[in-house]
Image (spheres, rainbow, N blue to C red):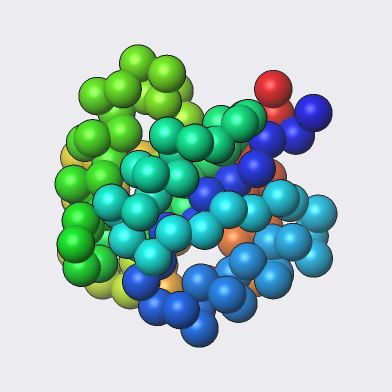
Length: 123
C-alpha cells in the first residue's frame, strides 16, 4: 500500500495546483495551510503520510517550527520532509529541518514528481 503525502503551503492556489499535479501522477494527497494544521492532519492520519512537502514561510507555525515539532514525535520522525520554498536562503534551513530534499519554487513538474517518488515511504 502506498502512503499518502502531505502538502503544507499557505498559498491556496499553489497548494491546490500541487495537489492536482501529484494526484494526476498517481499519489494520494493530504493538505494543510500551515504547520499547526499539518500537525493536526498528522495526528489523525491513518496511514501516516509517507512524505511531507513543506513550505517554509507560513503564518501560525512556519516550516521549521513544524519540522521541529514533527521530529519530536517518535511515530513521525521517520517521515521524510521535502522543503519546497521560494527563498534561496531556505536551503540552510532545510538542512536544519532534517529535510531529505530541497526544491526551489517555481519547480518543474517532472522534477517535483520525481523527487516525491524518490523519497515517499511506500509501507
